[in-house]
Image 1: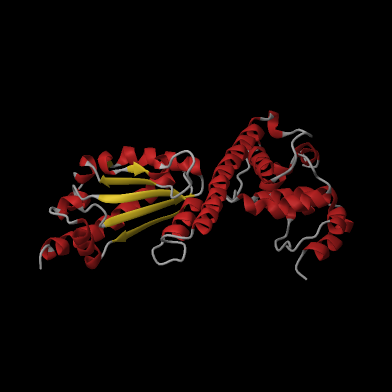
Image 2: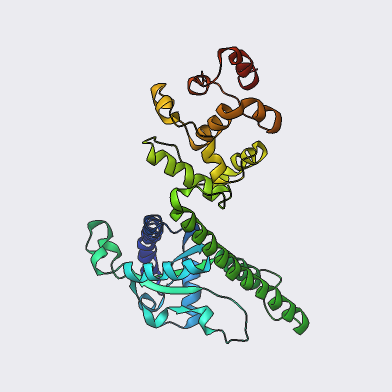
Length: 336
Protein backbone atom coordinates (compact mmCIF):
# COMPACT_ATOMS: atom_id res chain seq x y z
CA UNK A 1 0.00 0.00 0.00
CA UNK A 2 0.96 3.65 -0.47
CA UNK A 3 3.58 4.89 2.03
CA UNK A 4 3.95 1.46 3.70
CA UNK A 5 7.60 1.07 2.80
CA UNK A 6 8.46 4.55 4.05
CA UNK A 7 6.49 4.06 7.28
CA UNK A 8 8.18 0.70 8.05
CA UNK A 9 11.63 2.21 7.60
CA UNK A 10 10.75 5.35 9.56
CA UNK A 11 9.38 3.34 12.50
CA UNK A 12 12.64 1.43 12.94
CA UNK A 13 14.60 4.68 13.14
CA UNK A 14 12.05 6.47 15.33
CA UNK A 15 11.99 3.70 17.91
CA UNK A 16 15.69 4.35 18.43
CA UNK A 17 15.13 8.11 18.26
CA UNK A 18 12.47 8.01 20.98
CA UNK A 19 14.73 6.12 23.39
CA UNK A 20 17.68 8.41 22.60
CA UNK A 21 15.78 11.69 23.04
CA UNK A 22 14.26 10.58 26.35
CA UNK A 23 17.72 9.60 27.64
CA UNK A 24 19.28 12.88 26.43
CA UNK A 25 16.60 15.06 28.05
CA UNK A 26 16.75 13.19 31.35
CA UNK A 27 20.54 13.59 31.41
CA UNK A 28 20.23 17.32 30.66
CA UNK A 29 17.70 17.87 33.46
CA UNK A 30 19.87 16.02 35.98
CA UNK A 31 22.99 17.92 34.88
CA UNK A 32 21.21 21.26 35.30
CA UNK A 33 19.59 20.27 38.60
CA UNK A 34 16.03 20.75 37.31
CA UNK A 35 13.59 18.47 39.16
CA UNK A 36 10.97 16.70 37.07
CA UNK A 37 8.06 14.34 37.55
CA UNK A 38 8.46 12.41 34.29
CA UNK A 39 10.07 12.36 30.87
CA UNK A 40 8.00 9.99 28.73
CA UNK A 41 8.42 9.05 25.09
CA UNK A 42 6.20 7.25 22.65
CA UNK A 43 6.58 6.16 19.04
CA UNK A 44 3.40 6.46 17.00
CA UNK A 45 2.26 3.12 15.58
CA UNK A 46 1.80 2.37 11.88
CA UNK A 47 -1.97 2.79 11.91
CA UNK A 48 -1.64 6.12 13.70
CA UNK A 49 0.79 7.39 11.06
CA UNK A 50 -1.42 6.26 8.17
CA UNK A 51 -4.47 7.82 9.80
CA UNK A 52 -2.69 11.16 10.16
CA UNK A 53 -1.48 11.12 6.57
CA UNK A 54 -5.03 10.48 5.37
CA UNK A 55 -6.68 12.97 7.75
CA UNK A 56 -4.24 15.77 6.88
CA UNK A 57 -4.06 14.81 3.19
CA UNK A 58 -0.27 14.92 3.30
CA UNK A 59 1.48 14.67 -0.04
CA UNK A 60 5.02 14.42 1.39
CA UNK A 61 4.60 12.59 4.72
CA UNK A 62 8.35 12.07 5.16
CA UNK A 63 8.59 15.85 5.53
CA UNK A 64 5.18 16.72 6.94
CA UNK A 65 4.73 14.10 9.69
CA UNK A 66 6.73 15.42 12.64
CA UNK A 67 5.25 13.51 15.57
CA UNK A 68 6.19 9.87 14.97
CA UNK A 69 8.41 10.38 18.00
CA UNK A 70 6.78 12.35 20.79
CA UNK A 71 8.31 13.20 24.16
CA UNK A 72 6.53 14.79 27.13
CA UNK A 73 8.41 16.55 29.92
CA UNK A 74 6.36 17.08 33.09
CA UNK A 75 7.79 19.54 35.61
CA UNK A 76 6.75 20.61 39.08
CA UNK A 77 6.96 24.38 38.74
CA UNK A 78 5.93 26.91 36.11
CA UNK A 79 9.25 28.77 36.25
CA UNK A 80 11.06 25.55 35.28
CA UNK A 81 9.13 25.43 31.99
CA UNK A 82 11.14 28.40 30.71
CA UNK A 83 14.40 26.87 31.97
CA UNK A 84 13.69 23.62 30.13
CA UNK A 85 12.55 25.50 27.02
CA UNK A 86 15.88 27.35 26.93
CA UNK A 87 17.71 24.07 27.50
CA UNK A 88 15.92 22.37 24.59
CA UNK A 89 16.57 25.34 22.33
CA UNK A 90 20.29 25.18 23.08
CA UNK A 91 20.62 21.40 22.71
CA UNK A 92 18.43 20.58 19.70
CA UNK A 93 17.71 22.16 16.33
CA UNK A 94 14.26 23.76 16.70
CA UNK A 95 11.78 24.00 13.82
CA UNK A 96 10.47 27.41 14.88
CA UNK A 97 7.74 27.54 12.26
CA UNK A 98 6.08 24.46 13.76
CA UNK A 99 6.86 25.06 17.45
CA UNK A 100 4.64 27.12 19.74
CA UNK A 101 3.66 28.10 23.27
CA UNK A 102 -0.02 27.24 23.54
CA UNK A 103 -0.39 29.37 26.64
CA UNK A 104 0.59 32.47 24.67
CA UNK A 105 -2.18 31.78 22.17
CA UNK A 106 -4.86 32.27 24.84
CA UNK A 107 -6.35 35.75 25.10
CA UNK A 108 -6.14 37.51 28.46
CA UNK A 109 -9.70 36.54 29.40
CA UNK A 110 -9.35 32.86 28.52
CA UNK A 111 -8.21 29.81 30.46
CA UNK A 112 -7.35 26.56 28.78
CA UNK A 113 -4.78 24.06 27.63
CA UNK A 114 -1.27 25.36 28.27
CA UNK A 115 1.91 23.70 27.06
CA UNK A 116 5.13 24.56 25.29
CA UNK A 117 5.37 22.50 22.13
CA UNK A 118 8.56 22.02 20.10
CA UNK A 119 9.30 20.31 16.82
CA UNK A 120 13.02 19.47 16.71
CA UNK A 121 15.74 17.30 15.32
CA UNK A 122 18.90 16.25 17.12
CA UNK A 123 21.01 18.90 15.42
CA UNK A 124 24.08 18.90 13.20
CA UNK A 125 26.72 18.43 15.89
CA UNK A 126 25.02 15.52 17.64
CA UNK A 127 24.25 13.80 14.32
CA UNK A 128 28.00 13.67 13.62
CA UNK A 129 28.43 11.23 16.49
CA UNK A 130 28.46 7.58 15.31
CA UNK A 131 25.58 6.54 17.59
CA UNK A 132 23.31 9.25 16.18
CA UNK A 133 24.31 9.21 12.51
CA UNK A 134 21.26 7.26 11.38
CA UNK A 135 18.95 9.66 13.25
CA UNK A 136 20.12 12.83 11.48
CA UNK A 137 17.29 15.04 10.28
CA UNK A 138 14.49 13.01 11.89
CA UNK A 139 11.85 15.31 13.38
CA UNK A 140 10.37 14.72 16.83
CA UNK A 141 7.97 16.63 19.07
CA UNK A 142 8.52 17.66 22.68
CA UNK A 143 5.80 18.98 25.02
CA UNK A 144 6.82 20.76 28.22
CA UNK A 145 4.17 21.09 30.95
CA UNK A 146 3.78 21.45 34.67
CA UNK A 147 2.04 18.75 36.68
CA UNK A 148 -1.14 20.83 36.91
CA UNK A 149 -1.07 21.78 33.23
CA UNK A 150 -0.76 18.08 32.48
CA UNK A 151 -3.71 17.28 34.74
CA UNK A 152 -5.86 19.88 32.98
CA UNK A 153 -4.89 18.63 29.52
CA UNK A 154 -5.61 15.02 30.43
CA UNK A 155 -8.97 15.79 32.04
CA UNK A 156 -10.32 18.24 29.52
CA UNK A 157 -8.85 17.03 26.25
CA UNK A 158 -8.70 13.25 26.34
CA UNK A 159 -10.92 12.22 23.43
CA UNK A 160 -12.31 9.31 25.41
CA UNK A 161 -13.18 11.26 28.55
CA UNK A 162 -16.51 12.81 29.55
CA UNK A 163 -15.22 16.42 29.62
CA UNK A 164 -14.16 16.42 25.96
CA UNK A 165 -16.26 17.74 23.12
CA UNK A 166 -19.02 20.35 23.29
CA UNK A 167 -20.62 20.68 26.72
CA UNK A 168 -23.71 22.68 27.72
CA UNK A 169 -22.69 26.31 28.33
CA UNK A 170 -23.14 26.23 32.11
CA UNK A 171 -21.10 23.02 32.45
CA UNK A 172 -18.40 24.37 30.14
CA UNK A 173 -18.24 27.57 32.21
CA UNK A 174 -17.86 25.55 35.42
CA UNK A 175 -15.13 23.41 33.84
CA UNK A 176 -13.13 26.50 32.90
CA UNK A 177 -13.59 27.99 36.37
CA UNK A 178 -11.98 24.88 37.86
CA UNK A 179 -9.23 25.09 35.24
CA UNK A 180 -8.64 28.65 36.45
CA UNK A 181 -8.15 27.35 39.98
CA UNK A 182 -5.51 24.96 38.65
CA UNK A 183 -3.75 27.85 36.94
CA UNK A 184 -3.81 29.95 40.12
CA UNK A 185 -2.48 26.97 42.10
CA UNK A 186 0.29 26.46 39.52
CA UNK A 187 1.44 30.06 39.93
CA UNK A 188 1.04 29.85 43.72
CA UNK A 189 3.22 26.74 44.02
CA UNK A 190 5.84 28.40 41.81
CA UNK A 191 5.83 31.53 43.98
CA UNK A 192 6.07 29.48 47.19
CA UNK A 193 8.94 27.44 45.73
CA UNK A 194 10.89 30.64 45.07
CA UNK A 195 10.17 31.91 48.59
CA UNK A 196 11.47 28.64 50.08
CA UNK A 197 14.65 28.93 47.98
CA UNK A 198 15.09 32.55 49.08
CA UNK A 199 14.64 31.55 52.73
CA UNK A 200 17.28 28.85 52.32
CA UNK A 201 19.69 31.45 50.90
CA UNK A 202 19.04 33.80 53.85
CA UNK A 203 19.75 30.99 56.31
CA UNK A 204 22.98 30.06 54.51
CA UNK A 205 24.17 33.66 54.65
CA UNK A 206 23.37 34.18 58.34
CA UNK A 207 26.44 34.79 60.50
CA UNK A 208 27.62 31.27 61.39
CA UNK A 209 23.98 30.23 61.09
CA UNK A 210 23.53 30.78 64.82
CA UNK A 211 20.84 33.15 65.96
CA UNK A 212 17.91 33.02 68.33
CA UNK A 213 15.92 34.63 65.51
CA UNK A 214 16.40 31.60 63.23
CA UNK A 215 13.93 28.84 64.13
CA UNK A 216 14.81 25.19 63.77
CA UNK A 217 13.14 23.76 60.66
CA UNK A 218 14.15 21.27 57.98
CA UNK A 219 16.01 23.89 55.93
CA UNK A 220 17.80 25.75 58.73
CA UNK A 221 18.70 22.56 60.61
CA UNK A 222 20.26 20.77 57.65
CA UNK A 223 22.20 23.88 56.59
CA UNK A 224 23.47 24.44 60.13
CA UNK A 225 24.67 20.89 60.73
CA UNK A 226 26.36 20.74 57.32
CA UNK A 227 28.19 23.99 58.12
CA UNK A 228 29.13 22.63 61.56
CA UNK A 229 30.60 19.55 59.83
CA UNK A 230 32.60 21.73 57.43
CA UNK A 231 33.98 23.90 60.25
CA UNK A 232 35.03 20.84 62.22
CA UNK A 233 36.28 18.77 59.28
CA UNK A 234 33.63 16.18 60.12
CA UNK A 235 32.14 14.42 57.07
CA UNK A 236 28.40 13.83 57.27
CA UNK A 237 25.88 11.68 55.46
CA UNK A 238 23.46 14.31 54.08
CA UNK A 239 20.06 13.19 52.72
CA UNK A 240 18.87 15.26 49.75
CA UNK A 241 15.20 14.97 50.73
CA UNK A 242 14.24 17.59 53.34
CA UNK A 243 11.34 15.33 54.43
CA UNK A 244 14.01 13.23 56.14
CA UNK A 245 14.38 15.94 58.80
CA UNK A 246 10.75 16.20 59.88
CA UNK A 247 11.04 13.73 62.76
CA UNK A 248 14.33 15.24 63.87
CA UNK A 249 12.83 18.76 64.01
CA UNK A 250 9.93 17.37 66.08
CA UNK A 251 12.33 15.67 68.51
CA UNK A 252 14.27 18.90 68.97
CA UNK A 253 11.05 20.80 69.61
CA UNK A 254 9.88 18.32 72.25
CA UNK A 255 13.34 18.40 73.83
CA UNK A 256 13.04 22.19 74.09
CA UNK A 257 15.30 23.33 71.25
CA UNK A 258 13.45 25.95 69.20
CA UNK A 259 16.26 27.97 67.59
CA UNK A 260 19.70 27.41 66.10
CA UNK A 261 21.17 29.44 68.95
CA UNK A 262 19.74 27.00 71.49
CA UNK A 263 21.09 24.08 69.48
CA UNK A 264 24.56 25.63 69.40
CA UNK A 265 24.59 25.85 73.19
CA UNK A 266 24.21 22.09 73.72
CA UNK A 267 27.00 20.94 71.35
CA UNK A 268 30.09 19.83 73.28
CA UNK A 269 33.12 21.83 72.15
CA UNK A 270 35.19 18.67 71.58
CA UNK A 271 32.43 16.52 70.08
CA UNK A 272 34.01 16.16 66.62
CA UNK A 273 37.39 15.21 68.12
CA UNK A 274 35.86 12.53 70.33
CA UNK A 275 33.71 11.14 67.53
CA UNK A 276 36.78 10.86 65.29
CA UNK A 277 38.71 9.20 68.11
CA UNK A 278 36.10 6.44 68.28
CA UNK A 279 35.70 6.30 64.47
CA UNK A 280 32.10 7.32 65.08
CA UNK A 281 31.26 9.12 61.84
CA UNK A 282 27.60 10.03 62.02
CA UNK A 283 24.75 11.24 59.87
CA UNK A 284 23.02 14.56 60.55
CA UNK A 285 20.44 12.63 62.57
CA UNK A 286 23.15 10.84 64.54
CA UNK A 287 24.95 14.08 65.39
CA UNK A 288 21.87 15.99 66.51
CA UNK A 289 20.50 13.10 68.57
CA UNK A 290 23.91 12.58 70.15
CA UNK A 291 24.04 16.25 71.16
CA UNK A 292 20.64 16.01 72.84
CA UNK A 293 21.49 12.78 74.67
CA UNK A 294 24.85 14.10 75.87
CA UNK A 295 23.22 17.29 77.08
CA UNK A 296 20.46 15.57 79.06
CA UNK A 297 19.47 12.04 78.08
CA UNK A 298 16.94 11.77 80.91
CA UNK A 299 15.12 14.87 79.68
CA UNK A 300 15.05 13.32 76.20
CA UNK A 301 13.61 10.10 77.61
CA UNK A 302 10.91 11.96 79.51
CA UNK A 303 9.84 14.50 76.91
CA UNK A 304 10.53 13.08 73.46
CA UNK A 305 8.59 10.41 71.62
CA UNK A 306 11.00 8.31 69.56
CA UNK A 307 11.02 4.96 67.76
CA UNK A 308 14.74 4.32 67.23
CA UNK A 309 17.39 2.47 69.25
CA UNK A 310 21.15 2.72 69.59
CA UNK A 311 22.55 -0.57 68.32
CA UNK A 312 26.25 0.24 68.42
CA UNK A 313 28.39 0.84 71.49
CA UNK A 314 27.72 4.61 71.30
CA UNK A 315 31.22 5.24 72.63
CA UNK A 316 31.15 8.95 71.82
CA UNK A 317 27.96 9.57 73.80
CA UNK A 318 29.00 7.30 76.66
CA UNK A 319 32.36 9.04 76.97
CA UNK A 320 30.47 12.10 78.27
CA UNK A 321 28.33 10.20 80.80
CA UNK A 322 29.24 9.31 84.39
CA UNK A 323 30.06 5.64 84.90
CA UNK A 324 27.10 5.14 87.22
CA UNK A 325 24.62 6.22 84.48
CA UNK A 326 25.84 3.94 81.72
CA UNK A 327 23.80 0.86 82.55
CA UNK A 328 20.56 2.83 82.81
CA UNK A 329 21.38 4.72 79.61
CA UNK A 330 22.05 1.51 77.67
CA UNK A 331 18.85 -0.05 78.96
CA UNK A 332 16.83 3.03 77.98
CA UNK A 333 18.15 3.45 74.42
CA UNK A 334 19.58 0.07 73.46
CA UNK A 335 17.83 -3.02 72.05
CA UNK A 336 15.25 -4.43 74.41
